[in-house]
Length: 328
Image (cartoon, rainbow, N blue to C red; front, side):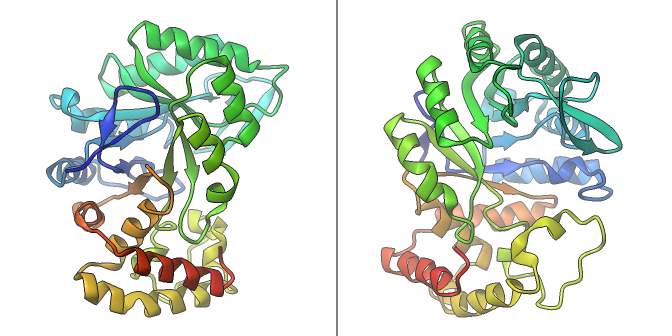
C-alpha cells in the first residue's frame, strides 16, 4: 500500500487515518459501546489503517482511554496522534467552552502542555506520541507566546516523548510563526470537497514550508456517505446541527450532488464514501484524510478508498458539480 510522508518527520503512512472523537461518546455523540469501539479499531488495522487520532477533550479523556485499550500490544505497529492546549482541571484566563458539563480552558503554556502530555500518555497506555497537535490556538499571544509553545514541543521531541509536531485550527500567519521558531510537520483542519477553504487559504504556505495537511470531517459528519435521507431530522443537541450543509438551504443541494455521482459509483464499483474520500485525497498534493467511525462496517467502508484510483476527469467533474451548486 502506498504511503506518504508527514511533513519533515521520518513518519510515512497511508493517506487515511481513523478519527476517534465519536467513539468517546458523551453529549455530542450519545452513548457508545466501548467493546464495539475496540472492534472498530481492530477492523481499521485489518483494513490497512495505521494512524489513529484522538484528543483529551473527546468526552474528557474517554476517547483516549478506549484507544489505549484497543492498541495495547499493537503500539509499535500503529501511529497515535493526540492534542494539547485544552484543560478542565483548572481555570486559565482563556475560556474555551463548556464540554460534558465542565468548563474547558485554553492553556498553551509549557507547564500546561507537559501536563496534558503526561495525562494523555497515561490514558493511552504508551510512553510516546507519534504526532502531537496543539488543539486550538491562543487568541492572545501575550498570554501564551508562540515561542514558549513551540519551545516546549521541540523539547518534548528531543526527549523522545513525541515524534512530530502538529497544530490544529490555524491561520496562515500562525503556520509561518511555528515554522520560523522551529519545525511544524502537519496541520489538522476541517476540509471536504464541499468546504474547501484551506485549499485556497493554507495549501500554498504549507507547501512552501513542507507542512503536511490532515483533513478532518471529509464526509461532513456522514452527509457525504449517501446514507443520510433528504428529510433527516436531527435531535436537539446533535453536533451536526452546527454543520451548515445540513441546513434546509444546503441539504437539497447536497442530495442533488450525491444523485449525480451515483453513476461514478457504478463505474468504479465503489460506495459513495469511497468515491468522496478518494476524490478529496487528490485535491491537495500529499493530503492526509481523517475519517471517523463508530462501527466496524463504517471503517471497512471508508477504507475501500485506499485502493481506489479515480480518473482526473472524474475528479474535475465532481469539483465542478460542487461549484455549480454554490457550495464550495
